[in-house]
Amino acid sequence: MADKKNLLGYSQNELEKFFLGIDEPSFRAKQLLKWVHQKGELDFDKMSNFNKDLISKMKEIAVLTPPKLKKVLVSEDGTKKYLIQLDSGSSIEMVRIPEKKRITLCISSQAGCALQCTFCATGAQGFEKNLSADEIIGQLWLANFNDKKDAPITNVVFMGMGEPLLNFEPVISSADIMRNEFAYFLSKKRITISTSGLIPQINKLADRTDVSLAISLHAADDALRDIIVPINQKYPIDNLLDACKNYLSAQKDNRHITIEYILIDGINDSLSHARSLSKILTGLACKINLIPFNPFDGCDYNRSKDKNIEVFRRHLSNKGFITTLRVTRGDDIDGACGQLVGNLKKATQGKKVIERQAIA
Ligand code: SAH
Ligand code: SF4
Image (cartoon, rainbow, N blue to C red; front, side):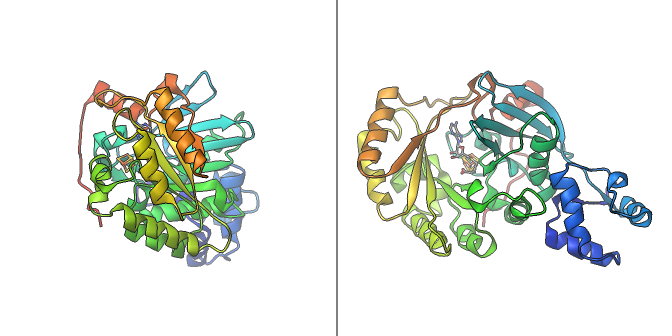
């Protein structure tokens, strides 16, 4: 098994190369994508348009293996949180959030994260590993096919554990599979990569994909952002917003960036913070998503008071920004991302930084 290829994470391009390499026509790639990602079939023997010879050849050199589900928690509000065990021993989480017709899956791109934002449970765990493409797309596969009663996912956000742009190629490959018409066929607007703001990677992104981009801004001035999102020391706000504009100008249609802003009591949630935010965002085609801070053990921050959230939101709306307030979902099942794995770790071994990730 160890040296067999896990085709679950192969894009159409990679599958075509794979099939040509075993003297099969490239259209097999489309057939395999359909079996796996549209019908949820992982058993080569059941792929009725593959002949016996091909099936035995496939079984010798390839597997289709999704990551293992360790636990599924269902919230009173319908949110489902999945704890997934990777072969390396690391755990990751994903969250399925149904709202009317839209069913959003929040997926992880890394186990842990090296970037240590001060409000983030995943950051507090440190970096463990980059997920492979099969471990990333495997999350969507599990959400769609593990429980046949669940309606298919309509939207995917890379807002689970990890910094997607620090795991660039597997994230792009899995986004390709999400977009592919023989696989999940999700439109570019229904896939969102969220980043803390790695400028070189944002600049590279437009050449490789057209999915939507969200920026975890959380502060409107460098002095504060340097502290709460430390990668800002390397990539300051002005340059980051320029990179966002460049990403948008590379798209042909009318697009916008989502700006995510966590509201932390007494840290970044005053009216003057809101004024600075509206000032720096003027001229950027964006929507603002305000996220009340989700508390977790070991972090001293508190969620902003409701009245402050309202003043903040109203200021932005008055300035003409489309502003949404994220309703916290799945509170009863360890709502903050990274919290479930964090609590599990504490309960098991309490390991912290296992490996350092070099940040380009
Ligand atoms: N690393 C990427 C994507 C994962 S974090 C990024 O930073 O954008 C996804 C979102 O979850 C980010 O907007 C992040 O700021 C938010 N988040 C992290 N910890 C949170 C917490 N304790 N409460 C609310 N949102 C949180
Ligand atoms: Fe990493 Fe995003 Fe958490 Fe920051 S907010 S530590 S970048 S996962």
